[in-house]
Image (cartoon, rainbow, N blue to C red; front, side, top):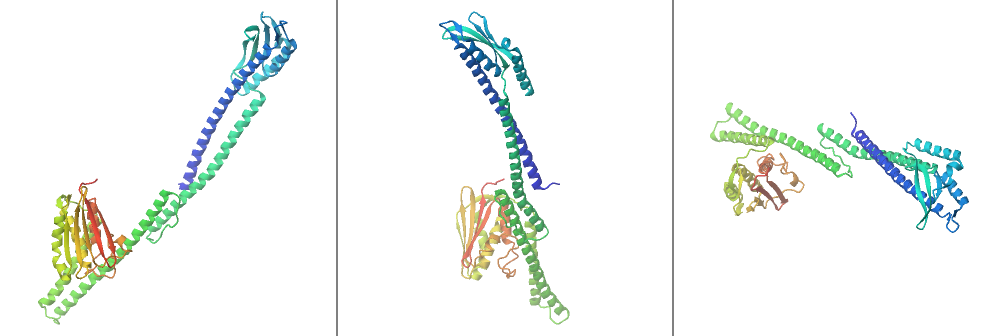
Length: 463
């Protein structure tokens, strides 16, 4: 198997080579086509120049031709690849390049034909006749034999060869530079991915404290790195909470078991009388077992998929008032007042699950409220959702613990016993139920000032 760096490098190399090849091909074709059009225009201009020069050699007053100049023009044209035959107005031949020097004409035409055939250019010698005139008066004509549709000289071929060599050199340089840049880019992309994979492997082996600290200049790679680091942090917290829960359960099991065992041994050996008070003490310890088992059952429930909901039309305000009434006795014992206010909010939800949410939030509020404190429950209604806010003026939550309070097993004060702190799953259950309703739950708190929990539930079921 090839590495990501190798795959990226090869992919970039192949893409660059194909791109450069196509660009070079099309550039060469475009340049050759433009050059051919340019040569064709130049040849036509040269023919027009020959016709103009020949026309000026006629002396209208003397009605004669300047034979020396005709000869000079004819020979210069021959060396350029044009074989001329000049006629007067009556059609009489007055100068012929082939009759003048047949050997030279054939040699020049042969050289041109061979040169053009070597370049695989289709064509041949053709003859075109042009009128020679002065003003509106025709004074003669000229037949021009030349290689068509166009022909190139040695300088023209050298120019084309140089241009093609330059295009090839540019293509090779572009390939080398692109390969170097592509390799560097592939390495910069592959390095953080490789490091992230190594970090993920360490996490899979239980090393949850590892982090990928370096930053990249790529948004997606930074998101990947942040996700891996966030996963490691979450697993580290879960592992810490799991160990804490194991220790808590061991402690909670050991304490009642030791108490029940000592009581029963004393009564069995006749050291204590089996009085109702002593049996009641054993019963209280058994109830503590039941409470612990209930917490574990709730934990098992939220470990599964989202809770199943039996939706029906509910009023959040009615549920808030009903649940608040269940805490009147506990609140009165601490001198805490509970006020429920707001407006009715009708929406489809599971009434039992929403009562559980309200129960957990109010239980925490009463548990951590100061003696003589106040708890306010407010229900708000809107077109899209219903909102419940539970606010207290109790001990509050430290800012460092606030982001984690909805995680399973998390307790802000690890020293609290189950009688005050619980197992750390109450708020996790709240979050699970609210999210099952496609709602949101949030917390705000200031240490020593109190806390506020806000639950928002949509009125329409979202997919």
